[in-house]
Image 1: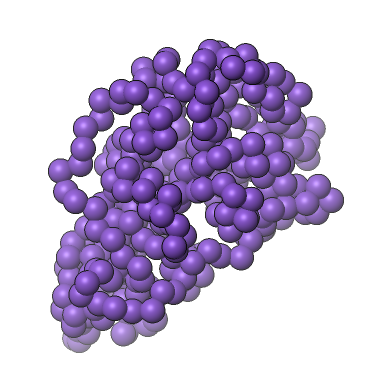
Image 2: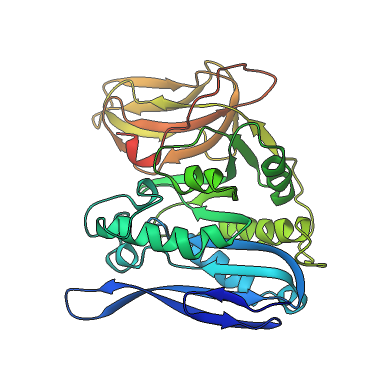
Length: 333
């Protein structure tokens, strides 16, 4: 197979190498680069990118990337894997979701080589990684002080993405519209099929979310014909499919006592939490609006009226709701 070209490097078939794509220079004269680990197989196959830490504080994905790269099945891999454990190095070093210019990298695609720093990085990543790929898996977590059940999000009306999502076999697959400026939006326009993985919380490792993500990636690689054996097995629980979701919000301010957690099934108008004042003089129940499964929740017991508390995916077949864009973590205020 021909060498794989990225940046100014050529990686021979049957080899692997880390390529440092220059981004910029930091204020203290330290160079900042985008590290891309290329595993170029001996046999022909698709090009898959695996990206993490697009949001700088969503660090869990980098451990998934590390475990996939260390897996023995890659020694006989077909095709090419482009693994980027840390896309937003700036936010990673400062424990921040955003870029130094306060922009959200996942709202800055496809980027520009004459724009802001976020736009420059988005442009570099999109040109050198995304557009060289056939498929991608972008790894995320919940925002700060929230937790997400491991889940895959896919674009509507895409049978190939649905096939790969089922191969990943997460607890939940959500079909959601694409957001303006997101990696998924412009990857889709470029003909690149991208799965979005959500699991765990910001600035924390969660073993279940890491294990689910690692096994899911290897299952997708197997479904694409990139690895023959992955030895990760099948999940014990079937995947739940949903096309819409809702947030249960705090009816009053106070102290939240949760009755449900990520992965729990809930019924319409079922009480899923109680909010009380610190003195115990009143309490207000929190109800689920529809039948579904809890796919995310706040980790903070201190809440104000209107705060998003429980993210519930409506279960297909029980609730028929119009397809809507899933609430984005940084827009839930």
